[in-house]
Length: 116
Length: 114
Image (cartoon, rainbow over all chains, first blue to last red):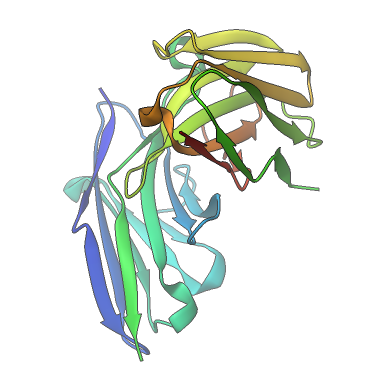
């Protein structure tokens, strides 16, 4: 069965430092992977998605992720953290519609803190 | 318009009350979802509607009753809830069929059961 694992429930970086949030997937078929961000008391917003068109995916707010099949990873990065990046980040894989309704299976989430 | 709206934003209800959550989208999406999210946890799927028909029920207790009156609206009727049902309830919508299509989420309804 397809699933994702996020390593590190909490990551803390200094403003201006590199952000690296880790996500590993488990799938016997090509996965459809997503990164969502959730700010406090808000819904989820899509950052980026992998759909096999390109292994390096650029998203909103300066984030990008690289799909590495050999490592079964889809880590999220940003070269320089801003205070406004502090939020909860979820990696997710999407199941097929025909038998699972296209539901998203989320990782446990990583809380990103940004220090001034 | 890529917005999913949810009302109310906050809801406090007693265990004997009946209330409803409402979700609306005007993106022409034919799949709509209800997720439940507890604090510091990822969202968990409750229901999926596809073309206004219930296609997935993730073994949700019958005190939660979904309804999809038309392609733009999704309701969640609540009755005789328990305190452990307190959570953020998120609605989402998407196209049907293509797994690469993202789900668009609403801001959620924060439910407190007293």
